[in-house]
Image 1: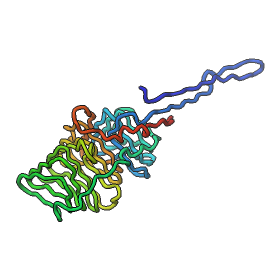
Image 2: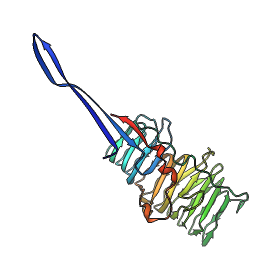
Image 3: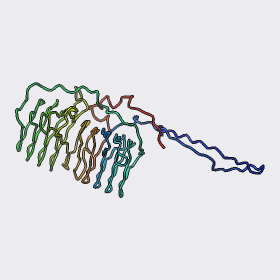
Image 4: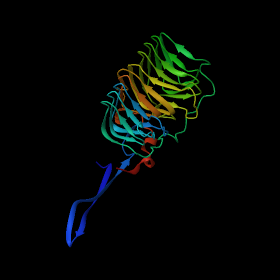
Length: 320
């Protein structure tokens, strides 16, 4: 299938006994397979290389990434990719540095292999967005009811959209400084060509309850192709959670270096997106959530980040 080649060597053994030649058809046998990884379109990268869970799926959750690859850098001998409770993973290729554990009726559809080489962070060299010098709001902005239109800028203390508030965002970069982006209750958040950058302690995002979220990443600028981006230099207090059943559209990359994302909804996530990718320290899905990582790149003008096409991430390695 153009992604691997297997070499097999056989040698028939011959025994000499009392002038007779006795042949053993089984003889000696050895084989090795070389796989080419990194050429498949990428949808998921669990960046964490430590002895920890990389991709953890349970409680009948699912990830649908049939057109692209899923990579886990975790070196854990059995939980680089850990699946239980009838969880299902569909991917063009699943590549785990450590081991793969499937408990109960958990299933992986598509090629899956262990002992993969570490997959480099495709966005590590990306220049971070410029943070404005002043805050649009000096403390956390909370909206509980009514209709709002928000503009790009630096939101110090974060942003909370709750109750039945309906918020539309003008395209641009939204800096969440020292606080979360929280969408909860029956609130609605929509925006095209928007990017969220999380910096400062206790920042992150939480999409909860019955909140409706439909967002698409910028097509130009520092955050082109990136919808959510965590500042990799900040270590403390970040929370990234999706539990709403109405997170319908997330076009772009969810880029969370050094952080874990928890997907806990009871239904589909990002199903209406042209394409979605997740790059995080670790990815955890549960509670029947069905994450759709589509690859219909031609149906949107939101570009796939250039780092995803870096030829240096393509590697050949030996496996069994």
